[in-house]
Length: 169
Image 1 (cartoon, rainbow, N blue to C red):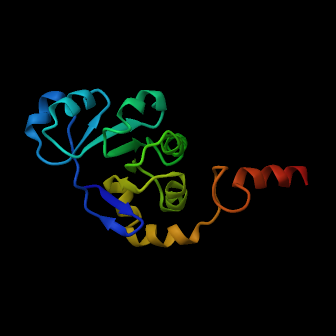
Image 2 (cartoon, rainbow, N blue to C red):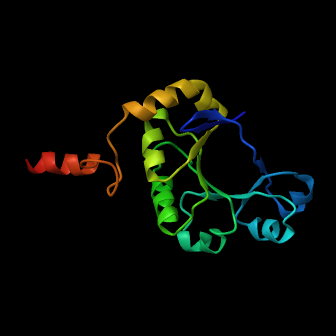
Image 3 (cartoon, rainbow, N blue to C red):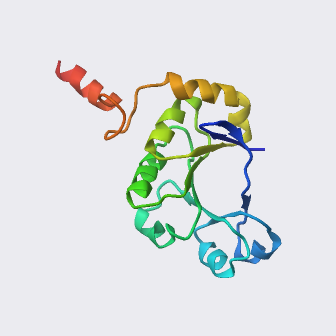
């Protein structure tokens, strides 16, 4: 069982995952589909809203045709140490996606503020991650962790900028 965390705390996940176009007729209500199935889901329009799940290395140009058609984009993180999904979230927001952005994978609570600052609205955790760090830990980390890795948002210098300044100084 996964856990969905938003700025407001733990939330229920309304989306059912559908892996193939043949399974679209078996699902009712909101669905989350991979890029290989999104065309069929949009054409079928049996399910609404429609969400799209993509890997964290998916180029934005591959998603641009769907930015106005899907309600949610879930970016899959293979591990907490792979930050490419954070960059993808920033690029999707810059490209005009205004729907819900979901980080999906084994992130850690210390990354919650960073994920929100990059444009994510929610984090979906696999069961082992949710068991290790319950929702209360995520809420506490959201306000405790103030440093940021990405440049271009937040106040003050990023962690990288601070490290580079320390080397020079």
